[in-house]
Length: 279
Ligand SMILES: [Zn+2]
Image 1 (cartoon, rainbow, N blue to C red):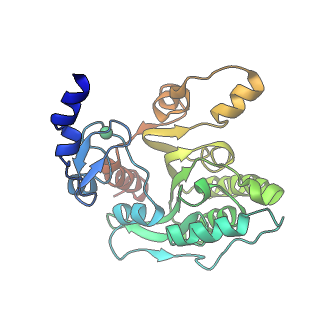
Image 2 (cartoon, rainbow, N blue to C red):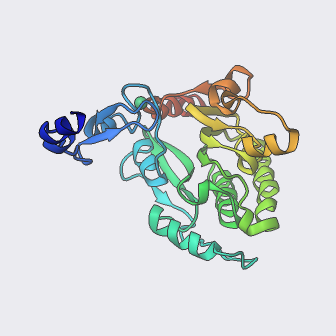
């Protein structure tokens, strides 16, 4: 009897073809899974209007929503990574991420204006090998600060780095931590303000220029810390709650000055710059 019913009664699955949602119109939030209008999502600077999740954005996109249109002058755009250790697959990964991001390495640097105020700006892009720091990132961040000292400019860096120091460059990568930390000191000695916005900041990047700023801002939900969960679990045999690596936890414990939603970043940085420019 059951078999007969199966044969004679069409099921929904065979009778109805559900229309596929056009992906260019709708966007599914990767956190709350709500379907939101892509247009609304874009207008909200890729922050989910339902749950507030801040999707990662690339360096060029970040630049466009941060600085005054047409004001950006790029520095050191020609610097490209080498493969000093002949690390397996490194050259292929670099080539893949260069195409993906439109960058030669994970950092974009230059000078621009924000609400008319001049600033030396750096942005690291998570989509380029996790925003990790090799020789080029370290060199570009160092030159950014050195130029800022020469031109008496405040420095603003947006950090998107979940990878820290880039293992494919070994010691050449690790020494960038010392180098960028040293130039941060010179910036402090020159009495120029250094502001960072953490979107993700982990390991060798956070343990160098990521945490040495005068003012540390972070977007909601950013990953911030030193050691990743797998390393902690393997070495210390303890489980660390996920929230311990989030910006909000770091803010509550005094490591971050302010949590700033993406739409407020530009006016907040402009406000800080106005204090320094005394206008
Ligand atoms: Zn959401």
